[in-house]
Image 1 (tube, rainbow, N blue to C red):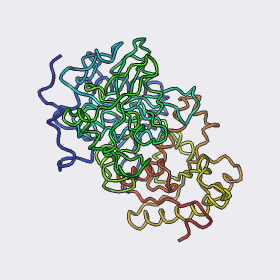
Image 2: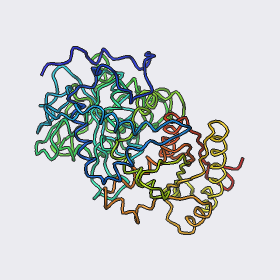
Image 3: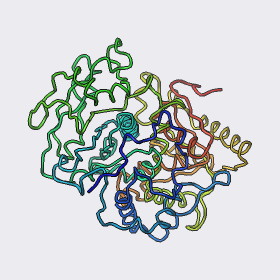
Image 4: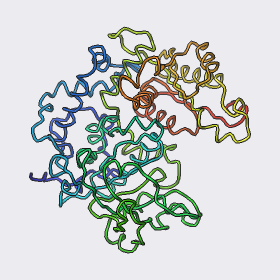
Length: 489
């Protein structure tokens, strides 16, 4: 297979380009270099097969356009794009041009000699893992490497949920179009269930922050992929605050620099032996890999909170939902709002109330004083509804709640507001689609409303707010908590 005349270095620099088009679903007259016919054909085929298992109702639900201030939700256009381009369903030679061919027993056999790659394992809770992957995608861009996305591990789900591929959650072709950068997934690189053990040396970001007992972060993905990794700690100077013991934050450009020979050669410490075979390989130069990238940033921690976050601006905002996942969410929304299959989903305000495991942060404060009461969320919802009405003329009178709260009395109070929710137990979401969909569809619900009200300090709420704001120009608020009256204003 001949490589495209274009190379990764031909990319529009994401820090300089003025040509980063927000409308990632537009259909260009020429197929862009970074999204080959083969790669798109394979993904279109996967989406088509997945969509076939839906009922006719689900297909209608997935293709219906959702209006916010008179504009249709662009996710539905993904399916229009597939229907309008049947040539994309051709599955001949359906593999990425950034690989040698179909998945192989050993991942090394599928890596092109003229291409370099980057991956991360990311074990830290699903939303944090999403942010970790967005971070490493950005590092892959600035280091001019093909990003290889791992599957998500069920760290916040029962283990029987298994792993779910990145592309089963996100629209990878749309992400590639928006980023203008190549992305592949591990299932494309190495055969799922391969019995070949690949030994590889990786960088450990986590070990650099553990002063008392520096070790790599335990990660499940290498075992799932039958990869035996040894780790070398990144240098202390890669940290944002190198003089602050135990600080976790690491500079994006420092990680990128470690993938270049001139910087790498001065920072090769003693590797931690691998868990399986006990090898101590130095960090791989062909497939750069990292254990955990949640705390990676450009200037300082918690960057996703700010409008200049490079990982969000140049990666995250282009990561739209997989059309199949979106279709399932639409179907469940119709049920919650008591709509007919052919009805458009009306503008609504999504609410995310994180309580559950946050009780650890309450310390000695009783839960009823630490957590914000439903009335605090109701006040913020009213603000969002008023803003939407005044600025966009949108009547978002419907409210959909997602929460990990299990107290029936709490839910009764939510019901008294006239709000609704999707009960995944009664809907049998996990049984119908898999346990992962009890989590991922909630993230979709939170992001496709006209407005959003979330929980302060929740990364799930943070990303939902970013999506609502940047995808649809929606109104958002987040409710503070931690002590009685924390959100009073």
